[in-house]
Length: 585
Image 1 (tube, rainbow, N blue to C red):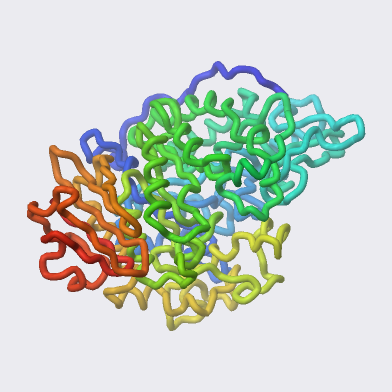
Image 2: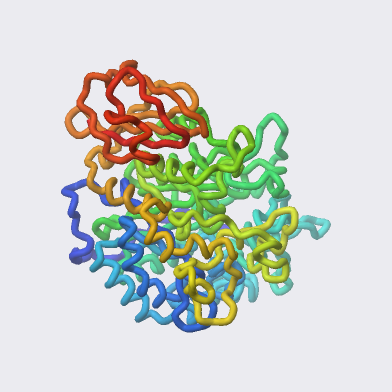
């Protein structure tokens, strides 16, 4: 394995600034507090009758996306791929897979999105490729060729076994796989068909940056970088130490995954990765107002590690982690703890909040699925949490369908076992159900076949019957729907200066109330109050110097009358269950 230092630079000449990359915020980067709507092309809208969504389907529904009040869209992979892992196993990263359309479709999409004021982020998968990628085919043909060192290869131990004890995140067994032609093992941290690129090789870094340039020149506004903390491994290939009970569980992974038996210290989450980030940032900085969003979820402590990925001016712009993916009931203490730790580990900001995506399930399935008394959360709980998420400092990723409050599809109730598409799910079911439950198609129309997603007789994944009542057309007509709550919140957020300066002051409160102030002394302030429980709770404004201030309720998530005529005037404010109150000071 080569460990040569990379001494090259980027070769892109400075670009003329197209209109959509000009800075409308007079120096405040748009991405610092962007709301990014994640689109899974597979499941958004099918316009060709294949049962699979496509780029034209995204174009057709951009009006809907813009109506939400989001700032950007993030597209998961639409590149040429054998599709063994939702397109994250790529054979050509600068070609659109025919399953989704052609390059002209993408060019149309980005043009219309920009006309609507939407930024466009695309997934970049630089940790691995498909084993059918021409790079891997050449690398695996023999030990001496131009790409022989482009992947992570190693000889077997004397007994023929893999080089060390590293486990795959997806398969529950060794991450090393035998290659007969080279008589060596190659590393694949996810599926066996997804070999790891050798990021110690400067030629690999240069090739990756060339791919990035292609899309930057197409006009994209940034990249979501897949599995960035997997880019490099321990150059000495030392074993991962075994985990002890005293250490607790790592972040971003089920305790039933065999991988948790080991500490995440050598096969990934390596400090050497930080040495490669400046080259990525240097390329992005050549293009005005372009950004990067790193995925840092599987880690011993995803808050600490993701914060390190955005510190300073030479790493990534944003990173998201698994801090809110808690499998314990909602409480003030849990939420406050996550917020405090995030603020302390992101001194330069750069945090991006996430409560659901194509890998980690849905917003509605969070927090153990039940309150501290074991009761399922009522609808109001998700309205309250939507309000909390849009009030936190930093950016936010909102996964398609979460604005509708879609519950996860169940296996085998909603998705028969023989229709599981997720390779991870097939490998570990029934111990782990996999990720298909959060990938089912969007329900657009409650009265149409296949809920308006496709004209095909059968979509690529079944649509749960329960999603019909949550379809876009039905929720659009209901002022009190979760969809319209998200719309109100996001459009309100855009107009509040206090929500865009990064400042937050947490107030000392008792369970179950979480309260904080956004903004600073020199401008607008917003008081934010959240009841995280199913019972009434009293808040005392006077204890926080709020009682004598003129207070105007901007948004109330609950019955407006429940707070009384003056809302927060007086010594005691009685907060209804799962209420949210946002007040301009």
